[in-house]
Length: 340
Ligand SMILES: [Zn+2]
Image (cartoon, rainbow, N blue to C red; front, side, top):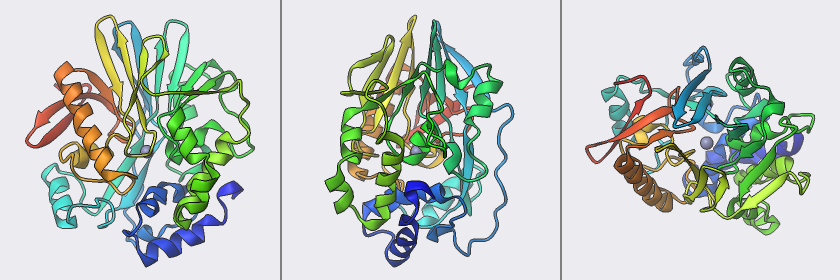
């Protein structure tokens, strides 16, 4: 199926042989969804855990000073919980953490939530969701964008945090068309350089090649006047500063909004589901490409957010995926908006 075809049998074989030996194998797992009906090794022979329930409505607005931030859920993937999900903690401990919060222990629900920023006449989308390349419980971004009162042509800028398929998949449809016809696409230069490097693709484990091919599907034909590469640290849009947070991927970048004395961090994949990885910031999710760098920057940024009492949003956080972080024990607890 498009450029991702061909890598999946290798992924399956690779993961079955040794799912822990190479970081790249785990990093490639999100892309298993790119082939639609393919069932990755970790999901084979798993009991049927049912279908996750999508929130309705699938959008939620908050104000950050004079800016409006709108969470737009793209969907939820339900994934059997196995020992590969947290790389450095025993499964029994992971299950105990979930049970202590009243959450299911046999599977995890991983949501995907891009954010729209409405600032004056600007309409800025942060990450895109899976587009037409995920399971049936995903690809809802456009429905939710319209439900919130916007059209794809209203978007003037798409800010990308990193090049995993759940964050860039929605930029282009299966016909190859850009779905935000008027948008500039702003990407962290180190992230772009890593994934577009043919030598790195050639040297990558087979299981990771699909991720490189997906990046080429999205970016290889992108006109030069549409693509803007930037060095993390700069202000990308008035009031929105990019923040380097490398580790999850080589160029993983956050966005920090400020308006009228208020502040909001979009932390992307600084952490996966907070019930596990905010509570235990030293735990490494299977998708972190450099787990130690990811761990360090996770602690730094969470400490910063707490010290500023800033609002925040996370791509894999439970909907509405926006709220505040508070210190708790050796880690943090996410308090969604609407919770006292
Ligand atoms: Zn992600």
